[in-house]
Length: 349
Image 1 (cartoon, rainbow, N blue to C red):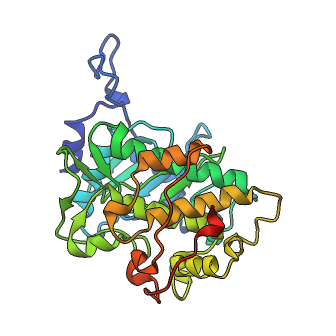
Image 2 (image 1 turned 180 degrees about the vertical axis):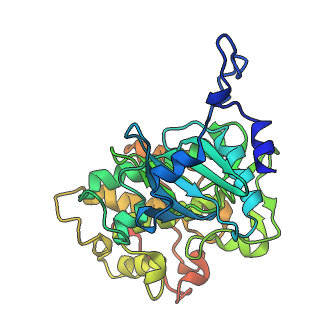
């Protein structure tokens, strides 16, 4: 049973007794709330379709308002979700350990018979894909200028660096995409949806996996051969950066965003990639630098891609310079139509 599995691992607010510290003084143990099912029903209008704000690997996500006015995000685990039980355990296991300003915060659980519900902090500005691609009408109009987009890129980079290196063990998210980047009231990005993420305690560069996980348009090419590493997240991050800059979804471009970027480079009009909504004066140099970093992340061979620490450094220290890009389009693999083309990246320097 999920409930037994959960309660044997983490303390809950409802179990606290005066003078009793369920964490035993450990700062790395989080205390979660066990939500009553009737509270969740009331908060979500009995899981009204009008309250749905997103869809995750495990099922729909609803906006909930508790009796004290506090807003929460409620993820109802679908009974039909493939490997739903294992993904749920995996997400809970990871979120109980992780603490970072750019990762979504789990508040607690609700277990009702065979239903499992996760409760998260509510993100006022929903997800990055809703903001970039207009998939949902937001409660408040948000003007996504370049300064905000740059902060989003840096925040996502910081969250991934924590997962890959700063947490201690290696955690590979495996599904980095705008739909899994949530935005709080201050537009701080929070990486979410850890159902298919993997934690590795071994100190190795690559791990073998038996199945491909992720979302089309963001999956690194080496995963076709069952090779998983942190560089898979780096690849996905690079695609997200191009989408943030362009306001275009990779899969909506006939030849893909990378082919479009290389085409613009060779035609000397790389700034045409900018989202048409970026009308305010902004630093063309910063935009070019971000495109440069994204193309490094999207190289076909994973060992040629930078790691998140290098990326974080380039994004936060403008005096440092990323390495030059390869000359041949073939370095970006089959996503480029003309692999024999020469890439002129001088416009990015």
